[in-house]
Image (cartoon, rainbow, N blue to C red; front, side, top):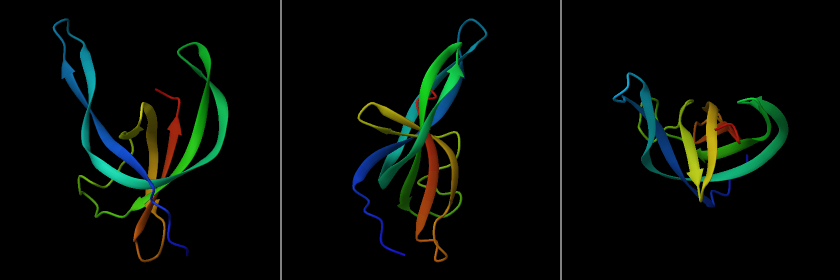
Length: 111
């Protein structure tokens, strides 16, 4: 296995939901930290989102590994942000047998 080129600085974010004054919920995003990664586009499609056809691009993102339960280990329902771009995390798995890297599947354009 070749060593990935982790040349993109991403911000890992997590949703925080709180009650609003009208009985609803407000969702805000809080930064958990910076993670260096490589990003490769894997294809795209159009999806009906909110009644509008929008482009959605799939990405494979590689990062250094982190133990299960660590705040630095990405998980589904979190997202990465880079210069205004948002990558919604769909799945996370070890990339190699030595568990040195994580392979993260994400989509841009869903949110």
